[in-house]
Image (cartoon, rainbow, N blue to C red; front, side, top):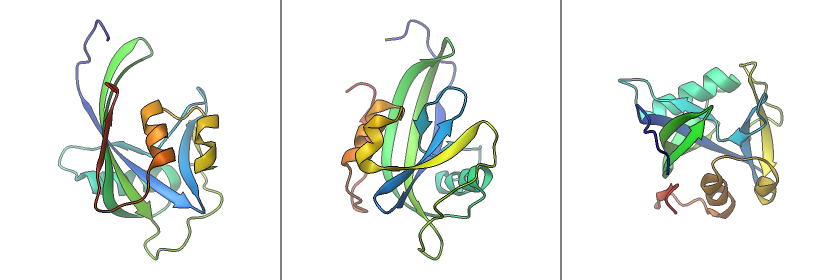
Length: 152
């Protein structure tokens, strides 16, 4: 448990893009950790709109945002500062349901994108760990929304 409390709760919209048993991960080039693509929800913006906007801004791809798959809560320390995040994770795909491209060029210098086979997710520094385990184990099921937190 952290001694200092975060000043805000960040609400982040993320997407799970799948291609041939692989999941698209965003990689922080400087620090080497990976996470699901997405970003902060802006005031007045829906979570699904934020997910589509973040995909466009980061990858240059227009995606169709599907069902909500996961709600997660994590508290952690980053650069000596306490953080508290609520993540809303959606299924995303191409509007025409075709496969997303093999290579995805980042639109931001600090990140890159990599397709990672679900069976190899434990071999990359996919953060947070609980979300990595969820991604490894989950079965796409539109009728089920999962919940995970750092309190497991």
